[in-house]
Length: 583
Image 1 (cartoon, rainbow, N blue to C red):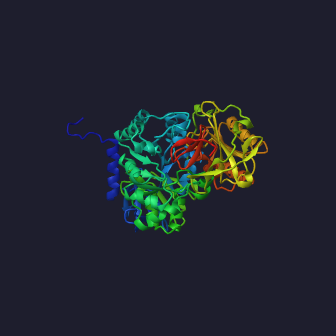
Image 2 (image 1 turned 180 degrees about the horizontal axis):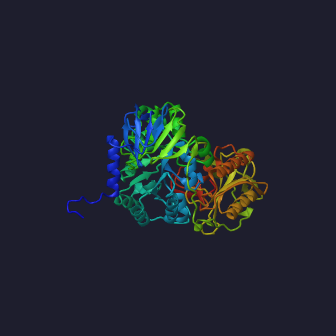
Image 3 (image 1 turned 30 degrees about the vertical axis):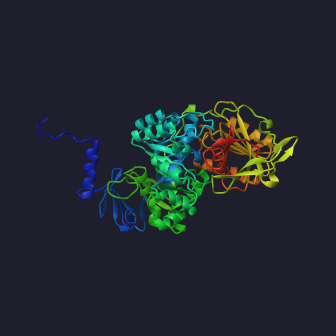
């Protein structure tokens, strides 16, 4: 080699040099989206400009020529939408099927808290989810699950330690921080285990998601002083404003069961969109397929009076900035070419979607999404001994504690009521909307069962059961007939997990989720159809609560106020202590 010859450029340098050449106008772009209007998330303006794409990134916004041109006349070009906090397992879909459903709605990036699969399989399960998503043209990032199990009152199938968190953050490029610190009492108190997990995140350069329903005053200050940066559990504008005033990022959640957008949006309308982003947290597959994803939250925000540019900023740039995803969140030079073309800023219905410069959806249809399979070891995880009706029998001479459920909320009320009695047993009383609820341990095969009462579902006969039960994902079952409750739990053990409706001693609808008891191996259309039929079957049994299975899933979560239930019994989540059934 000649002594004066320059060393060969690295692939990064070669790619960057070409992008700069395109940006300068010295050579044509790979693709130009021409003739549309670009929404600047930095100023809120609509710019008459072309978008020049070189490789996976935007090279320039202005007037450009390209090897390929797409006429974007009459369209508004937005950044790809980002779900700032969600649980893939709640969709019941593998990564490929989720992408098939979400990409046509303009979602190009999601930040997962995979603590469902982690509660079943530990970090090995999280690693398997990410490996399966590698070939999918949608960016999946994870916040490493911080509370597995969520509390000492839950029985999980695995444990994730501070050392596990540190190792995973160091080894996996898609792991970007520490997921919701649900054990907020431990954080506030400075418990050693909580502090070790926070240290693991900081040493790896990761940020920390929060989970602090109702936390206020000095305790909130302590939680923030620990380095926790966000919260998606606000249910009132007052709560969100107090947290935002102290620098906390507010994730406005609009999922299938928990819907907080309308309550929290006044804070944005008065104070602007700073430190605020959008998320779904938990969304059912039928809602995802029929109603949309983050674009649905954006559409609702605008319908409630939010300026369209502010709604888009919360769904794109703000989510990217909070999660330190510096190449995401804008249609601007140097950013990833994640672009959503819509006709208006009212419906937010994508006409075309590009991910990293590649067309991945058009006219509501995803393009070229590979099927993702789960490894065989992720099946067969629901281990429950065969149960009889007697497993749900309880004796109570007087009033009992009752979990009060409210539509659109995952917080519950702690009620007291007098159940009906038969043969010395306390039983359900459907005439007064008083059903039985139980959680059955399913990881080790112990069959340990906690039994209580619940109000708010409207169930008049039969039973509903699910292995989607945050966060330990044991079997949760609600019923007015103890024999039907046993049939429901036994059926879930037979099919490897999922959700089932039972009436008159037999299953009438079910959604099998054999992968960890959480994910289906069917297409999104098949799963959505089964979920719709499941909801119809539940309604025929008298259920009036919207998204009853999603609501059920939170009744076993021992870190959300006020009263919850696990396989170990009732938990007063305000005092963070077990309580007896009898009041």
